[in-house]
Length: 541
Image 1 (spheres, rainbow, N blue to C red):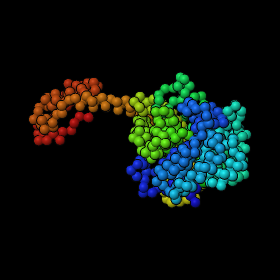
Image 2 (image 1 turned 60 degrees about the vertical axis):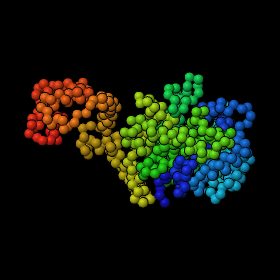
Image 3 (image 1 turned 90 degrees about the horizontal axis):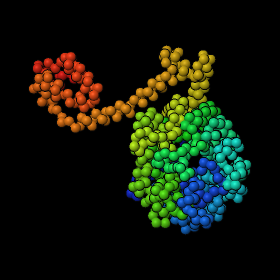
Image 4 (image 1 turned 30 degrees about the vertical axis):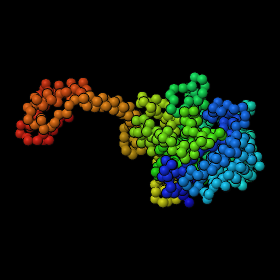
């Protein structure tokens, strides 16, 4: 068995290009049957404020008619044998057990030969034996929201009344383990737990699950305290948002612990998605995918939005009561939304060596102004670059093993070699083997840091040079072209006169250089007199 996990993939079939469906893969949807209703008040939650869009004082739970409409329509919209239902919130367990029993009943009725997969994301505080028995009997995969050990978790994840929630979550996890229910961990990485990577990682390893998802917290507030969407400029970063440097170091520290001890035994979503980028397959993670727009969000009343992180009025596509899901997913607005992830990449992303790994990450995190209209840089870019740079040799080796059809048997040997090399470099007074390599093996008189500094300096010049080139092109386009054939019968002075306006159009500096060379007789075009073709003339450089 291969020791490297790329993520679960759903088999695709030839119906992917169906007229009404614009995507080649399955349609994903995050269903929120209880809307933003929750028994917790996590400080960083991006969804609690959505209650303002649905101000009804009544209980917000998807009604039976909408539940049936959703399930039948969602199954019908799929072009794959497997259909994945992702129940989210708010807190979906507030819908009650009977709601999900009915959901399973509808799934069986409308399944039509499909294999139905249910996943549910919960804070875990409401789990008991009854819930867990239901999940086991119906094959639910349960995602538990947990931010690490007690101190990390209770930092921002509090109950509605303000009490700590850690103990309640741990009771829920114990109920899952007792019932034999498969569960994963979803950890939101914020300003606090980002500084405790190994503590968080080792804690999760001891919970009885093999899978953990790390999701960075990046949110901005407008002057009224409301959240801003990714396409809105300005705002103030929330104090709990993770810092780019900390996010990169968090991933890096965990990676080196993972790659030493846990490859093949414990799986981290970011690592799986990164490896997918190296082997050229779908990352299974919308953040790193080349495009988005195929993962919609469904509110309890049937409203459909472009994305779970874009539940704002201007991103509402329509309602399932009025329009089939496949039609909503194919709207030009939604297709443009999905394509915009790639189309709106700034120049820095387009030139980045790691572009194929993250593809600019999630558009909601592109909040750093670049000076390019409509093109902002991802706030976490610095952190991702740090992680990608430090881990590149390891991922390239894993990718080569997969490409060769090997099961990764050589990986431990390779990793042990890296470890020994780093130890040897440390004994010689170097930070790692790369530093040792630079100065001892290759005899370079500069460090990797100095090389990186030069690289950044050159990159900083490129936008200016590009801008100047565009200006020059604009000026040149206003001039009438000079045919080469017309130059053949000119004297040297006539040729220089004809060329002069073009030199001036390029830049004043270029015109000055041209004038100096002409005034000092440094142009020699006498070859014109003895040549029948201008192509023999070597233009000045």
